[in-house]
Structure formats: C-alpha cells, structure tokens
Length: 312
Ligand code: NDP
Image (cartoon, protein in one colour):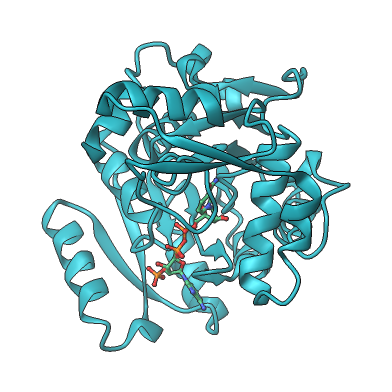
C-alpha cells in the first residue's frame, strides 16, 4: 500500500518536530506548514531548513489566509495538527476551527489528527475550572470535525514524559531532585507516561491504519502505568538513595491555586485530575477506542526506568 502524504501543522513545536521526524522516518512524503508569522524567529527557520534537508517539503501558509491552508491541504492525504495547547507556553486549540474549514473546502483529506495528545477530553466533562478549558476547547474541535464528517483519529497520549517524569510528577518541576519529593495526596493513583518521540512514532503508525479510523487511540505502554510513588521508587533505585517525602493533601493543593496566574492554575488542575483522581488510568478502553501498544507490539517503547536514566 502506498504511504499517505502528510501535512504537519505546528511542525516546529515541542511535539510537532517529533512528528515530522517520525513521519520522515516512516517514509511518508512529509509537508510542513511554514507560517509567515514566524518572521525572524531564527530557531524555527533553522529547524524548518533542517527538516527540508532531511526531505520534508515546506509549504507557505497562514491561519489568516484560508486559501493558503486549502492549497497546502490539497497536497496531501493526511493532516496532523500539533498546534500549541499548554497554557504556560501558548494555547491556540480553537484556531483549528479555521483548519477544519479549510479541510472541508479542500475535500481530499483521508484522515485528520487534531492537536490532542493528552487526557481524553471526552472523559473530562466534570473537570474543574479553569483547567477544563483545555478539554472544552478540544471537544469543540472534535464536534466541528465530526459535524463536517471529516475522517479522524484522536490520540490520547496521557502524560508527556518530560513534563511528568522529569519532575517526579510534581507541578512546576521538570528535573528530579536527589533529596526530596512532595507526593500529591497518597501518591498512589496510577498515571500513564509516554516518551515524546514514542508518542510521535505511535501517532504516525495510526494514520494509514484502518483499525484507527474514526477512533480514539490511547497510548498505554503497560510498563509505564505507574503511581507517583512507583516513579519515585524507580528514581531512588537509580540514584541509590531514598528521598525525603512529604505530602500535600487534596484540599491544600486546591487552595494553593488561589492568587496564582491563570496559566498556572490551568496546569495545576490538570495535575489534580491526573494525580489525585487518577483520570488517565481509572477506566477501561471501550469499543469506540483502541490501544496503541496492542496495535503495534513491534514498537519498543521507552520504559519509565530507561527514561529516568537520562537524568543520572
Ligand atoms: P507548542 O507550544 O510547542 O506549539 C506548537 C506549535 O503551535 C508552535 O510551534 C507553532 O507552530 C504553533 N503555534 C503556536 N502559536 C500559534 C499561533 N498563534 N498560530 C498558529 N500556530 C501557532 O505545542 P506542544 O507541542 O506543547 O503541544 C501540542 C499538543 O500536545 C497540544 O494539544 C497540547 O495540549 C498537547 N500536550 C500534551 C501534554 C501532555 O502531557 N499530555 C504536554 C504538552 C502538550 P509553527 O510556528 O511551526 O507553525
């Protein structure tokens, strides 16, 4: 079967650049949207040029120029969007409504993967303010996709390893301490951690797979379904030392949001749902969804232990 041609939007981003790499590695003809707005951002331009050197095609376009998006989309079969959606960086999820309009007009797209890559927003109808904005916006995008009958795949990637493992699951930390750790509650709720390059590799695998058409794909590498305490134990084993542990009860954690900046509050609520409620791992995958490590057992994913060794 011929491999789909892929357009990646947000190709210079934290996840987007990994999607470009994975798409090229899998042998897809890969296009990247080059937005005029990046202007003189030299890092982004250099990154795009290096992708071009590796065989990617750069396509000029802008979210403010509908026809430019339509033209770019017409070049490919599959569109993957990795536009920003983390408030502490930038949150542009609803811009995808413009992309969906362009996909509708282009009329040729066999699969669209919107910028999801986290907690399944469909399961977060009871999420707390203000963190729920991420899930609400992603659901608005889903509705637009489904109303327009655009074939889709939603990737629920759970926790990016860099954000969660790096800081031993503590918000605001991305490097593991060798002395102490604050447990969120009892630290026993299970979460799921996936290395970012692995997220991209699994994502690219799904795009030509009929089993993932119009489905949510959960990334649940079995060895990486662990509680905060278990992550800490792995780190302690690696450094040969026990960390000093304290704990922050749920009520105290929620009270600590008061007075913090909006972007921080959004992130803290996400940690709340993951670490105090176990929202990522406390449900069985239903019939409308599939699990990536079962679909692609040939992918040797990075385990939490392997990942933590990077910090030694
Ligand atoms: P980034 O913050 O790295 O941004 C990605 C890209 O979005 C940018 O490089 C840029 O692409 C594009 N972009 C940003 N602002 C604009 C704008 N105003 N107009 C048009 N394009 C814009 O994104 P992430 O990689 O952090 O996030 C991608 C997805 O992953 C999101 O859906 C997010 O929610 C999710 N995520 C999940 C996490 C988890 O733990 N599960 C953690 C982090 C993210 P360019 O300039 O190349 O066009």
